[in-house]
Amino acid sequence: MKVVGTDPTEAPWHKHRLKILAAATLALLAWLAYYLEYLPISRSFTPADAALTRITDDEAVRLEGVASGDLGSFRSVTARRVRVTLPATAVMSSPELSAFQAKAARERDAVGITCGDEAAVLDARPAENENATVQLALDSASPRKAQASALLIGKPDPNQYKNGIVVRADQAKMTVSVAMNRNDANPRMGTMTLCRSGRAATLGRAEFELAPGQPLVVEFLDPQGSADLAPAVFDMQGRIPVTAISGGRYEEDVPFERERIACGTSKDGTKLWARFMPDVGLSDCSPKSLFVTGIDIANGKLSVAKRPAYFRSFDDKKDSAHYVSRTLSNPILQQLLIGGLISGMLIPWALRQFRGERNLRATGSGGRRRKKASRTSR
Image 1 (spheres, one colour):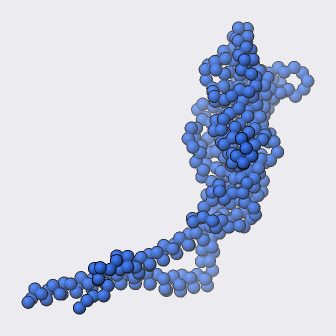
Image 2 (cartoon, one colour; image 1 turned 120 degrees about the horizontal axis):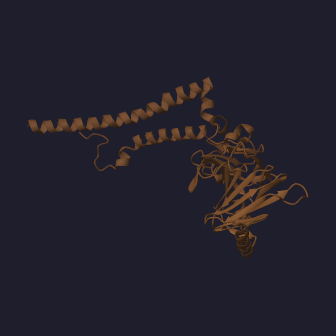
Image 3 (tube, helix red, strand yellow; image 1 turned 60 degrees about the vertical axis):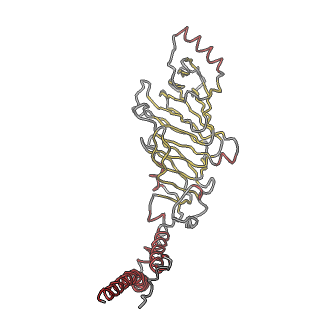
């Protein structure tokens, strides 16, 4: 007697097709539930989202999609010290190299100003009624690339720098202008020294150009060099339009690890259906849709205008659609969906397929054993 379903010539996938279908159905339901639960939904950026913009010793903020132009300037408060450290490969555009070298030679012979062969360092010590400013601007090769530029703002290594902030532009060159300014018409009394390639000279202004990816470190110190509450502010050049704001871990010479993101979009309440899994990426953001309105150096955070955005790794209750949990919170739908459809039909059907396959194998093995025993008894 032939046992149904035990044909050795039958394809494996065909023999187990019901079990495969059952597993695939359960997997599809699990994926659909996860997708509908965590589908990103846009909402407005509010002051409560300040955690995204925190700048600490190991966390940085990255502004995505910053266009070319002036960003603003760091400014010391009266009679404080500002030290700016640039990479040794930074290009000095002002003063000209020959003029700087000649002045450094004169001042070395006259007052003995010397320095080591390290990175370029500008040390500004404003006097009363003076301040030092560090002006920043981005310069990209084309407007299209300018929209894709990113500006990272973080904290440098505290073992090497005191009360400092690091700024790095990606996909764009950054122009850095450092100047001594006086608040009245009297002659300037403070000093600013530039140390570069083993030579040093006093200057009133200097300008450098950094290649994409080169960092700039600005320290705000008191005149003796300590970092005891040395005040400083960042004067923004109006609002900075950005495509997205990312927050995450930052270490020197290590790629930025994006852990949180606010991705600008057109309006509140829109759903992000495009991806296979519910997630938010830079490709989902609208250009120049968010606006940074302030940079708080003392507290290490940004101020952002109230604009709609998708959020990732922030507040799941507000940032996802939660269709499944909301549906299950309704007792009538909960009974219909879980009790009627899933528990009453789908799960029992799937279990029957697995049990049926196991029983079929057992029946086939028993039949073969009985047939073998019959031959032996003869």
